[in-house]
Image (tube, helix red, strand yellow):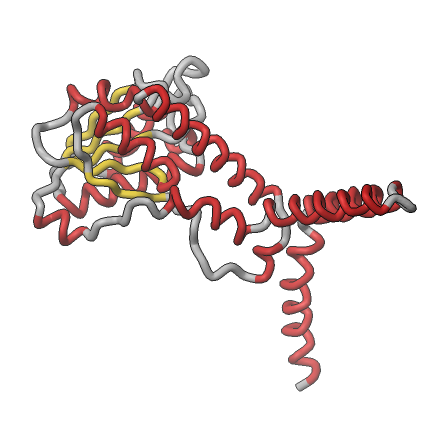
Length: 262
């Protein structure tokens, strides 16, 4: 019994230790905090600042706090059910690219980073469910200028290969969210359409399309808020800081877009 239980015990220990040992930001935070604490010996006010800054960095780099900051963007639009969309006769889907890596040739999937991959999968699946011969439009110039094929064109090529029965179109002139509506307009049929992008980006995208006179149906993908955080989510990590940077950029962009009337 004991011999058989030991490997299971070791696996549990490894599961607990890996998030601690394999977390470089945690060790960096610990090292800097200890160093600053030692350097401020005898200075109560300075040590208080060390505690405040260390606690702030820990919280901002933890998953629950990042999700709290992401929630206003990530949950601004509820994802409609496929049954409701089918009842409304929605047959076309617009997918906004989320950055990309330029590629010269196949496989086109190499052009899709994390956000673009989620948007591609969400868009093509939604279009297939809504109408097997529906219209799928990809929009965005990410990747152009560095290599031969822009992300939107790579997405379209991959979609045609995976779902040849769909009408797949793309435009690679849009270099910002504000440019998508005017460049997508010539490709749209005069009927309702689904707008697919990451949840954190959807508020800015919907504002841009509405200001251009369109009323798309929001379809968020790539969620940042998952809930039910494991205890390891309270540990600071570079992954959480990357999401924090993404949110900071999006909030700033929202302020700029609304100030400029985009």
